[in-house]
Image 1: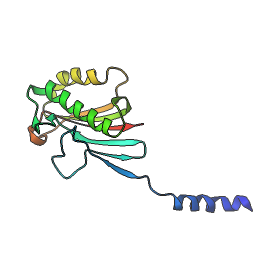
Image 2: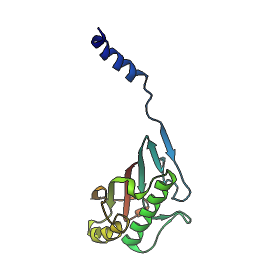
Image 3: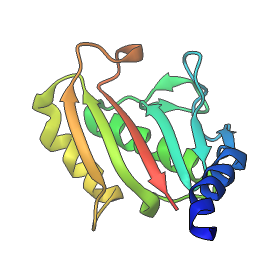
Image 4: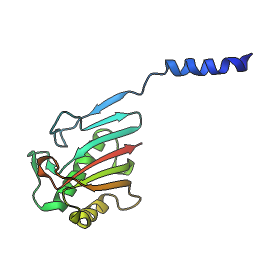
Length: 145
């Protein structure tokens, strides 16, 4: 008799389980969004960080110095958003990278390796026709704690 009730009990438990809380992350230590989106969204132990470009938070302008400087600034912006949510670079499990020119791949990788020197996250890198503010690189990440 009890075994016949198990499916119904499981269904009832699932029906009363609330969806994970969705928390908006915002910090002044990273650039303000350039559109209608959040810097990051946390759901449970997972943090989804919006694409970051090489904008200096204090000035709102793209950093000067080309692909390496923009990559470094974008990754510093990501670090700031991660820290605002209580995460670190060590929690990043996946990255999506958009380069304005794939010929910058080697220079980009040199800087990226400084931030992820061992056990880097899974990553996809593609060339984009155009990146906001005519940036050379945009990086978005997912982190899990």
